[in-house]
Image 1 (cartoon, protein in one colour):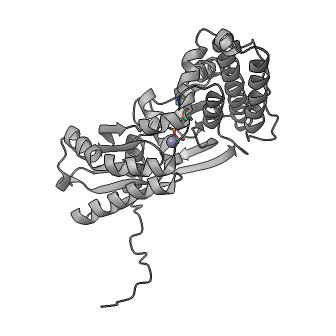
Image 2 (image 1 turned 60 degrees about the vertical axis):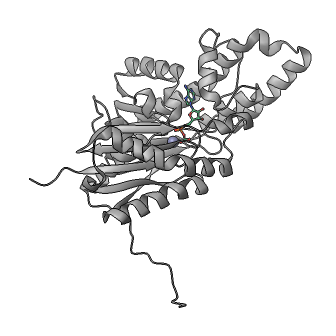
Length: 336
Ligand code: KG4
Ligand code: ZN
């Protein structure tokens, strides 16, 4: 019998340092170290993120290996996020993964972060069946993806400007909430009235999205109201958050619904950090119920950035023999 396929995976594209171990397609461990250092800045500071990754990477990998009970000599490959993401942050993960694999004499697998968000849907049961439509909503991206196989994905819609998560985070910053703002707005909205204030939903052709108009509209709305009543936020916080959240989520669901109807697809999924949003999940389930969809979304800890999804993508790429190309040697000169 061939030895089991064991893969160590590393994710470091933004502000989470994460490592996971997968064996024969089953996640054995998933360790995530967040970075509190960005909170006071209201957004990720790239230079600080890379430094924190440098500090975190070795302990995070050690813990992931420990929890998995897989010995490093029993690893078959090391998978890592190759992008998209912050260059300095990615470099820490890529360099670590390549050196670690080199030391063990095993191959590396480069993984696209957004493809991995989609494949987070395959970590737990019930898994989606192909083809399905996935709305990937994160801090940096908003994409409608037609998924016809594990590694066969077509982007049929994308944001023309800001991502949905960015809209949550920037609006939260305007209100003086802590970063990341998405989960804060989600929490504060729970007792709010989503119909209290009206925010615009961009009318973009096709399956594309746009959130920059909504963000600017929110900025002027908030400034004006605070100017005429300094206690506006204090008095109306839940309603402001719920109304903003309603606008973002409605914009997402409108496009998801029109794409599913046009493509005649009933297997529909969410992924990415914003798919942790309780209102989006609720609205998605409700729409799915009305249209007869089979709905899917990852559990909360697999929505935001994590190495388990990189491990999942790494596993499918390993099965297809898709490894990172280590032959690309820079032009080097012997100067001894
Ligand atoms: O996927 P992710 O961890 O990182 C990127 O690839 O960008 O997504 C992070 C984004 C942030 O914008 C964060 O505010 C948002 O996901 N987010 C949420 C919630 N949890 C995380 N947005 C709304 N509601 C939430 N519960
Ligand atoms: Zn992400």
